[in-house]
Image 1 (tube, rainbow, N blue to C red):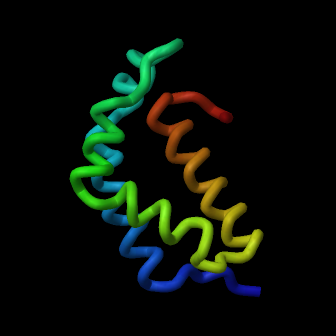
Image 2 (image 1 turned 60 degrees about the vertical axis):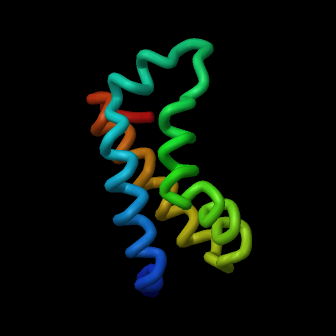
Length: 87
């Protein structure tokens, strides 16, 4: 069974990933425990991704296996940024 993502989602992942790369683990750690990520949300908003992601995430029709794969990728990326073994 193959779980290839559509090209559109690969392009979205790359573009949003590039934006997210500007917010390393130190940014997120500095927010803890009670600060909101204003700069990050502003960057998502200004780039148009916040609205776009709100539109496509619940309606794109990705099945649970693909959702799980995306979650695993996000967890692995986050763990690498934070330099921890498991999240």
